[in-house]
Amino acid sequence: MVVGQIFDRSITNRARRAMKGIRRMSMKRYSVFAIAREAARYHSGWERAWKSPQPKKRYDAIIIGAGGHGLATAYYLGKNHGITNVAILEKGWLGGGNTGRNTTIIRSNYLQDPSAAIYEKARSLYETMSQDLNMNVMFSPRGVIMLAQTEHEVRGYERTAHANALQGVKTEFIGPERVKELVPIINIDGPRYPVLGGLWQARGGTARHDAVAWGYARACSAMGMDIIQQCEVTGVRRDGGKVVGVDTTKGAIECNKLGVVVAGHSGVISEMAGFRLPIESVALQALVSEPIKPCMDVVVMANTVHGYMSQSDKGEMVIGGGTDGFNNYTQRGSFHHVEETVRALIETFPIISRLKMLRQWGGIVDVTGDRSPIISKTPVDGMFINCGWGTGGFKAIPGSGWAMAEMIAKGEPGALAAEFGMDRFVEGRFIDESVAAGVAH
Amino acid sequence: MLILTCPYCGVSGEETEFHAGGEAHLKRFGPGSSDADFESYLFHRENPKGVHFERWRHVSGCGKWFHAARCTTTLEVFGTYTAQTSEPPQSIKDAITAKRPGWTWRDFA
Image (cartoon, rainbow over all chains, first blue to last red):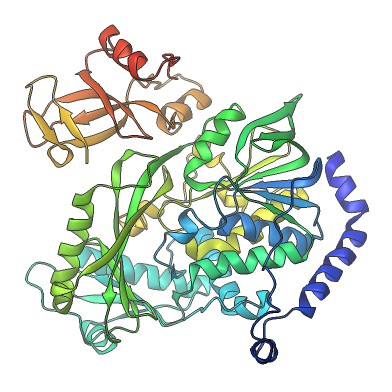
């Protein structure tokens, strides 16, 4: 409460300083003219995109985790709420966790209202992100199809299309001929799982995941925020049930407010703060093929057979599948899931059967009981947590940061975050996307 | 890829022969319990970075449920043991202590 008043009193000063930061950044804007200028002087004038300072003794707010969600949280704290005395602490390197490991799919065709609201907010922010951050995040609204391959799935997606119409999310249920028209390489007559239709979101698509993290980081740094990499949090300092700071591998840092945005390691931080989460961490894998000529210009997800695929701008087929069944922090998954996913996709896309796979990797995803995220206050006063995005967090980054920043600034969740509180597990007020999607999503 | 040994039939197999069943040794709460206890039983998990006790089922084998002690940061399996217990046997605890000195058994909620 006291903290909130401090924020409120100085908000105009801070907002002014934040604007100055943005103007400062604007002097070094990326543009066609900047490229021309640098080309004329052998590219000697490019600067580092963000500073790497040593931590100060104290910040108004500390965000743990410099992935997409953490950086977006910090960015909107500054941009929307004028709070710029912020540190973002990262134990590894910026964007090196799930932000750099996902398959970059963006969509908002969710069944439940709270999900549709936050994912659509995120998707709409992606539309203008390159301009807003002055960083080309290569948002490509090429369209996303979720295939219906059983009668049950047809009914499920028809229901989702109706729900989306009511939520103001533009999707439609399309028949198999239209699927074939959009994706000529697809086999719609498979003997086991013929394509019976699909849920089509024309403004879904992909973006370059690294650039999203870099763009937010650069904008945060320009607002005067400190991004501190290689700085692992080892303890959460509390005084009378209120957070007062963190211990890190670079020493103790004080703060008024603490935002925890650490995905798979949420349970590790919550244990430091003395509470448990309804979360389990498991490995999720993805892989890419050798690059081939353009053959598929939409994203296709096949949830019944459990695989999804898109083609990157480099020509690689980007493939993802299901999670492992057991708790895991190793960022390595089990091979049989790769095999299962690839087997399913070869049935669906016979032309990829002889493609060589170039790379395969894993990330640790934090999965909740209802497969929906947590954006919540915690039992510790002044400490907030944003986690549980599970297998589908990339698409939510801007909306998640927007909602988390609002909660940190005001001390209470706003409309976007309200339904995602941890208390929903006490009350049984689930946002049940696990049933809606039939699989991890 | 994990290699597990079923403590009932003695067969060792890789993980596709088994099915993971989540955290072991949960204390059950049902009708008459507090909301907090019931929530904790249903949803809260230790989810440790390190030693983890978990349930597995030998689905493509004898079909029995059993318990395993495993490290979530190395995927090392310390041992498997019967499901008919509310705490790991001493031999398992000793095996973990040998590999992870300083480790202590927590009474899981």
